Image 1: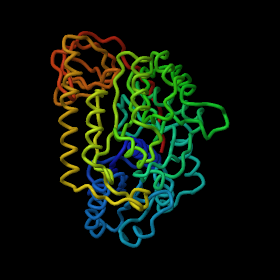
Image 2: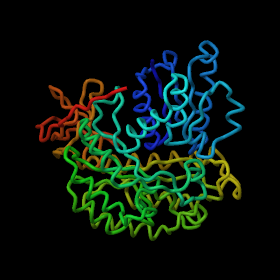
Image 3: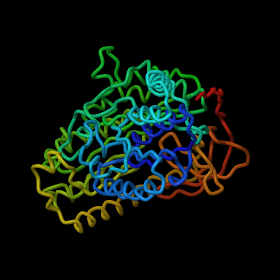
Image 4: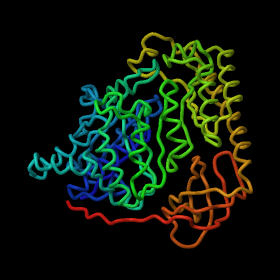
Length: 451
């Protein structure tokens, strides 16, 4: 029996797909790269922008002929296209889909397959809960050599920016129990994972809905003590909850990497207010100064939306100047796309023409290419520490602590090792260098997998 998973969207979806794969393998399924060869096909969808939603519908429609040829193949639609409340319109429009699953929940699919196999449902629920929900995540077969893993710590969101559909599709903010998170990361470390990235729509708010009195800095301290984990990251942050305590934890804990992702979204206060972001551009600039003062050498990434309803050219120019001044290492740029039932979609006119959105997008893209090139040029001739992830087109590929992508050549199996590389060439998005030495090899404790 074989399964195929198609994943679109954010890192949270990547983590969700990993959990689905792990659960399927507990039922005896093995992965295949082709949907045509699979007995179970999972589409894990994203709707954060219209383009992502259109891609999901395109992929969904492409499976109709497969279902007609092979009625026994099980098709599962999951993720934000379905949402936490389900979607009756989808069910009536796509009768070739057998199972509809909300984000982060493999339960409906696993129970459907258990029924088909005649298995005891309660026993299956217990085994799957133990395998993926209680901190005992077993990596699926095609990820057994994984070096860096995503670990959700906060699911959903309650902040409700006016443009964002995530609270509607993923539900209210829910923090996972700290013991469960620590157990999962310890289990990942035993399987050879050397780096974990803690995920949350607003990861800084971790623990605010729990009674234990734990927060993200405290969680970082607990994870820091796990043997085998050499690097820790977290994303995505929000300016309103980036505390000095959190910055102190990044500065004080050697395993926590000096890389912060904190979305700006716009450089104009009226646009920020319309977006319901909860801060001014002056407060945001102060935060960036605070981060750089506390974490010298930190790399910073941000998100920006162009063409938000009502955004005039002079307001866009304020965003341009803010990016020009703040000089981020990475800027994720998006053109505004109305999302159903959001405040912006219901109350604001999408009045910036598409060609103007694209012009603004290209202007920021060109600016950031120039800035990233200048920042990365400073690394030429320097020696950096790289965690090796995989081999890519004959070269080893890895990342620095500040999330710079580095390629280099070397003999032997260096996957999962921490090495030093002397940078010989630097571009805006990656660097190339000469291998110097291995400073730390990955350790791996085999874990038995039963079905």
